[in-house]
Length: 228
Image 1 (cartoon, rainbow, N blue to C red):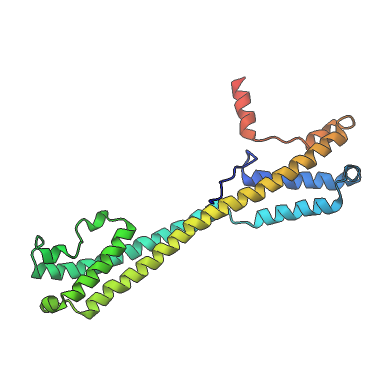
Image 2 (tube, rainbow, N blue to C red):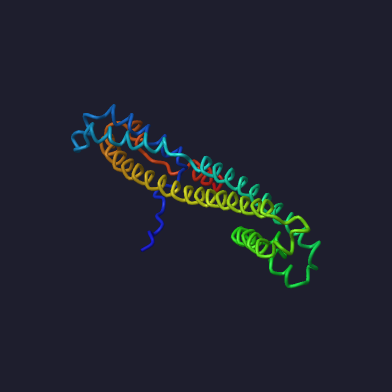
């Protein structure tokens, strides 16, 4: 069964969540003697801090998108090399057969510029296969094993680049999910910690109470001011 996509429990950027957590951890260290009275130990606080360190070390979306873009550029370059190799064959084929004949049509290169990546890959392999089958007819226009091998090599390079690009797309999806899951764990622990902190200082110190208050987003505060 396909895993259902999760959802973020927090409405702030990942960097802001991290800062909120580390600030709360510092405050809890200061107030640890009170937290112990709620069964929230120093060991649990250290575990929370470790969770934050792990979150910080995860690659962010900009990094993943950058890797994806690099892979896409390389795939595009490989596609152009394949098209060039195919055109080299078809220029020779056109010298031998009219482009409306069955022998020409068998190569299936019409509208090559509009082909999807899988269609282009299949086209390249088809051109090599048909060229080899008709090599005796095309030898006098320069179609030989070297020309055919060039197409096949370009196909292999393009397929590799295409697979790498797809891997990078999946890596990004996995990275987004991993950051979200880790962020949700942090946020859940942050809420517990802050609820304790507020309870500790509710009747004692307003400034320290406020240190444990969570504000979802500065943007929401700006919207509220504009509404007024």
